[in-house]
Image (cartoon, rainbow, N blue to C red; front, top):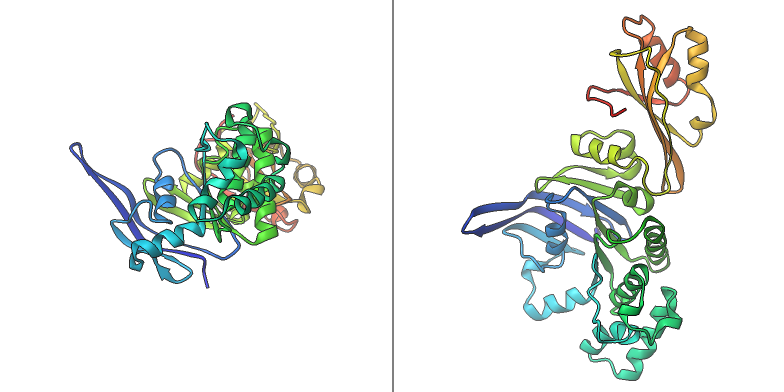
Length: 345
């Protein structure tokens, strides 16, 4: 059974300034144990969607089902119990500044009625899990941003959730700290089988940790699927823009070549994997056809632990060898597609 099902969810806000459709017939399925990314720029509706997943925001229309149960059908008491099984971490941590690290993690356990000794023992175990066993008596003001987020993760795990919702959880962190937090989330997913939903505007976060992704824009799902498939064959303009903006971020290694003697020729995008990347296909093709090719852009990224890359090639204007060269590349494991939009130099 699917962990989370979103069926035709709409969310409309009304104010003196008029009507705002934050979500427009959004549907998606998140499987048990998945790490699912929801990505989009500011205003895309992704944070509203994640808040609908635990009914902090009630949809105007549509259904949200957790393990087959519609949240709208639950009583207030049942809904509170359901929310205990859905942990949530935020961009700005939401820690109690006047409480110690240990007491912050104990807080949801006290709400559940756990005795102080039992709560403190469980909190200490969770702080060891997130690597902060030596900071139990510290206050949030004495911690770095990454340490604060680790406390927030430990607190979210205190109620043994089945689902963990991460709303821009790494946006306030530097790249190195972001990588360490993502590794921690990945470890939690693998160790406990917790389903994780990652809300972000950073493609680097999605390719680092997620198995599946939904791309949002204007309150709608533009496309969804496996991360490697979206990266290899982005169908929407929103996905292509997010992939372009990812260049130079995270653990990506990047190279660029520009050949000024070629311009305004046909362009294609090629995608290669860690296997096809070892053979100098482009260099061999140029030698075979005795025709120059401009490499407008070349990127290599780590997606799910595997090397994936892309190039934007521009052929010489008027070339009669383009189709033959595309066939040459396809026979050597490179996927190709036409590029019509402008390529940033």
